[in-house]
Length: 65
Image (cartoon, rainbow, N blue to C red; front, side, top):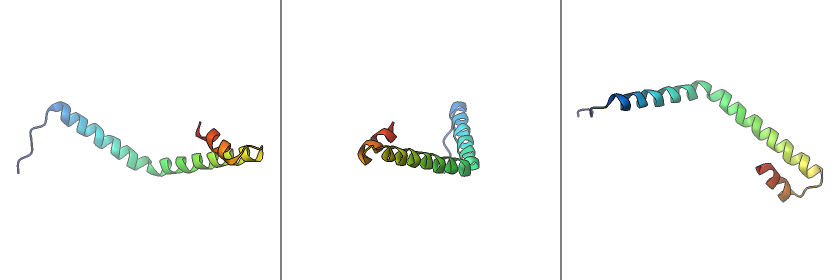
């Protein structure tokens, strides 16, 4: 099966996508750690709000912003 002829622009876009995916792979451990830390911060915010007297529903709404 013959490959379709790609334009220079399509080839460049393909390289850019490939490079972006490679960057994500290289940085995945840091991205995962960042998500874990953000979750820890959100949980601490929620706990602090509840401790200050906000209801659980109010605390959740405040954490959304």
